[in-house]
Length: 564
Image (tube, rainbow, N blue to C red; front, side, top):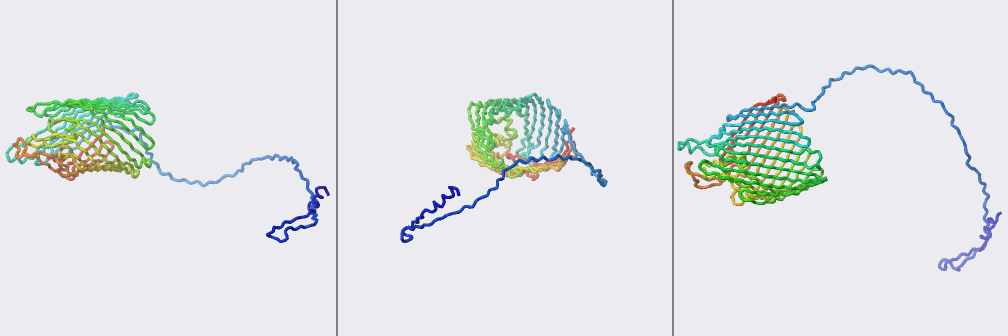
């Protein structure tokens, strides 16, 4: 036995002493004496060490063979249905000319002609002629015949980075002052008068605009308009407008501005016995703005700065701002804004709105001091969109119409100007289902607060417009439009006799509300030939848009059009 093995009995032969806790065993300590001699058996270990085994894998020769097997497939013949290819040209054929002819009730002829150059990359020119007239056919009022004639020609030239366009037009409009009752003349045995007014409108326009593909370039649009406007009694007006617009995009921001120079020379002549008067004035307006567009928002801030030199020189500044934010990928877009501007009232603008205005009206410009608005627009589905809006606007010298007091017929209107505030609550909805089905509707509810005038003469408290179109395979097209306007208040002097030169008193007249339905249908027999039918005022009501001026009852016009 080795020295390590003999050490164990000596160590283990030592006396063992066991201490007992006083609280656990009596007597204190215990001593155990004895000899412990353990024995360890010999161990035989197997000596195995890793050895290297070098094995060589023999190379096998691989051969490929082709088995001469033939597949037998049954022969079967199937019939293939003929296929029809729909091949369309890259550009559809354009016809240079288009003519439209029609005739309707109350001896109402209609004629229209278009002719242009066709498709070209360098230039374009064209002309448009139109005639529309009617014998009137209204009972118990003065002669109500009217006529409209227009001629419009243009030429455009495309350059590398610009487009140049010139346009000339002429319009002649004839109307009768038929807004008076004929019973008094029949009673007195007098001949019913036929007061008429004719307006001549001659215009020329030249325009140059940029066509840069790079949005960072300075885009610009310069336009010069010149118009000469006269009426039958001798009033005349020359208006020259110069408009220059420029804009440049820098990053996400766009800087823009507009310069307007509007000069108007007006000579009013009511008759040969009344002396003429002149009103000349120039409007100079500068409108700078800056806008930025993000992924969800649009912000635009600007101002309208105007110097008005009509009668006396005045200076005006109008705020202009807009903010919108997109929610849920443009499903809902709330927006707010403020707007304002100075507007010119001219002989042409007044008589186009109300052709039965007196021959030489006094002119005054109108200021939209502010228009605070806010709303929510969006889409309820892929086919249905909406826009709900509330606005509150303040006006200075807003244009209104009252019956002229120095005309015993009571068939002409005098412009009056008044300050007012207008609350407008509106809603607009559009529907486009594709396949030629479209519809839209708009409702406006107004509340007016007047300055000097007692009522907002001839302005409606509400107005509803409806429209729809249906196209059946582009062969049959049907359109329906409707206008619903609420009751309006009109101010008029009252004459006791047609021979009186001054009125006895004045009165406020309430004009009834009305519904005007318009239906149009067109059947395209071929791509070049079609027939149409139009019906206006389907309710056949003689409503009055202007006091004492009823409209024609149901007017039917039928005709055909042809492209060549």
